[in-house]
Amino acid sequence: LRPLAPRTTSGLVPENPDPSTNEEHKVKRASMACAECKRRRTKCSYDTTGSPCTECTLQGCQCFVDESADKRRKVAAKRSEEENKRLMERVKHLEGSRDYERQFKGLLIRAFREGDNDSAAAIIHSIRAQLPEKHLLEVLNQVL
Image (cartoon, rainbow, N blue to C red; front, side):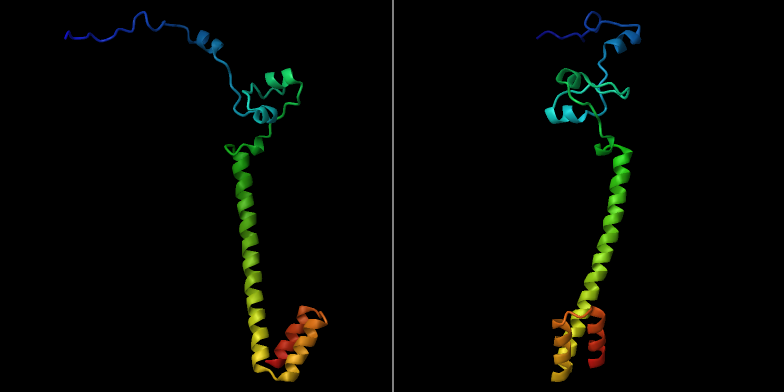
């Protein structure tokens, strides 16, 4: 076996002393595709100048970008943060409602267990008459 010499780079990679000519040939890609290109799953050439992308121009479609739908952007992060905050408030409210319902149910059961037949009849009458919950609580407190 003969030893191999290291590969030389001369002649393989064209040397380009002017980097600006390289930038001229680069295709500027959109940071985000327009809605129509997303739907069609095609490459989008959307730019921020407001002119429609190439695909939308060819298809005669309306070209628009919803930046708030892009989850990589700060707008979407802020929106999801606000949504999380709103959902946490909703969870706290529902947990409070659940606790209230548990206490109310416990009070109702205790009133039936500890009360006599007349008090049970008064509770049942309040429920069947669809009186406000406030009235039912007053009846329960009288029994207990």
